[in-house]
Image 1: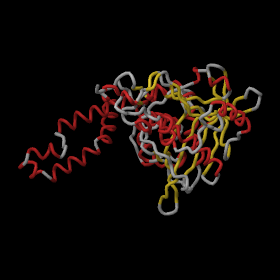
Image 2: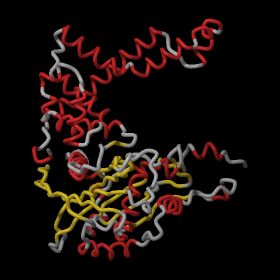
Image 3: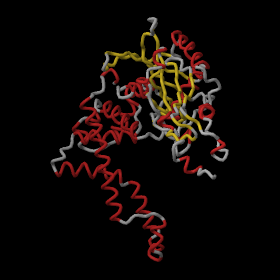
Image 4: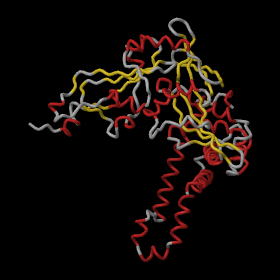
Length: 416
């Protein structure tokens, strides 16, 4: 009897890897059996492939636990049923634990839960690496929590060993993530910790998130730091901690003459929202971004002051200007709103201006071959107008979200 392997892979022996994988940041033995402290990955295709599926099990649970401070790792699994290869034309179940460990590139992961429990006590002696930059308190649902942010570089080998485990989270929370080359001394690290008391009363530091920055060379003798990866771990999200983490990066480079400005590597929508909120809040305190000057349009003084005071680059300063000018625009006044809309669209239209120039250059060829325009992906004037209108609508929507957040949750003055 032949077995439909493909059908089986879509059936009862196929698991959604995002559903069966569970993480925990373990502070005490009680957390191991406490499912309320577990959290799921946002993605797992970088481990299990584009389908994000695991073959060969029913009732599978894959456990990737970290001690809260040292990030000592435990990897285990349990399941109700595993396929018999003899009934599936010799197809073996996926070797889940081996696959995960190979992708994580961690040489030593604990596979015995008792050994992991025994290692938890070592967290009490853990001390954050590097220099403490700031300490702050956040009011939360169950009382106030205190957090510290530390800065470290590649000269600390013990930190690099710790970072090997810390960076494993990015495979599950940052798309197209890759490990960084820590042999390059231009990498800088900012790590966020929550302070808490262990069951024995010892003050401990639980890892809550981190940010990596690469210090690029800028001609002739300067540096342009670029934020590469930033992650606040799921149990600590929606508390405003990302704001503190990003501001710590700004504080580190602010006032350093050798630093030109700060850039960001391929920011996703969520990070761009965070960056806009922080940058717009900071620039709103600057004279060049005062309401009367915003109404006069973007000018070099805005870019210069944003860079001088906060190391915000020119492109981002322009975006901040548009956000803050929207705040000063009366959208119910057709003249005022039209002026703002045209100002933003002029920037959004820059890529289309290059396309228009190309169309003029190829005018004779396009007239001879009507299909050439389609082959080159060129838009008609009507299509460009429609696209530009949609881009403005979406941009305005993003800006309104930023302004609403600034109004509801003003940036603390100690971050300025």
